[in-house]
Image (cartoon, rainbow, N blue to C red; front, side, top):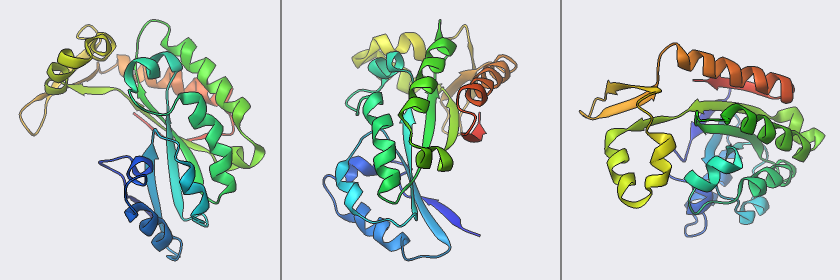
Length: 210
């Protein structure tokens, strides 16, 4: 049994690798461990990683969302089209490549935009990439403190991130308030998107959705 270890929980390793050799050291370490695999999510395409020879022992999870959401929420990251186009290259270079559909934001037309994204992803993938693809689906969770920060520098994003009409609060362990889509409604949102994935990307296993 192989254990999977997230090496980028609090950062984007693809970005970190532009300024530090630590990420490469980890990829090279894991390629020699028979029962362990490294994993990290990224929103940045770093072609330097293609020369690292991971031998299938590192999983990269490219974060994807509809282009309309990305233009609003993904500031200073690689365009969604570039991330999708890079998947085949990283599979060929010896990485296991999954996708993160995250964060999923509920708004007018959200499901139609996700259908378009899924079709684009299917068209972009080679047979080899399709065969090993899996996805994580994570719906938006927000909090009051980040909301206040964002109001100061990116208020347009808060129009879709902070939706009291759709969300319910829950007190966090640190004393603040987290908000997530309301119980009952969220279950329907999750079911709608996972059914859409099964229809548009039947080869893509959904590892979890919440």
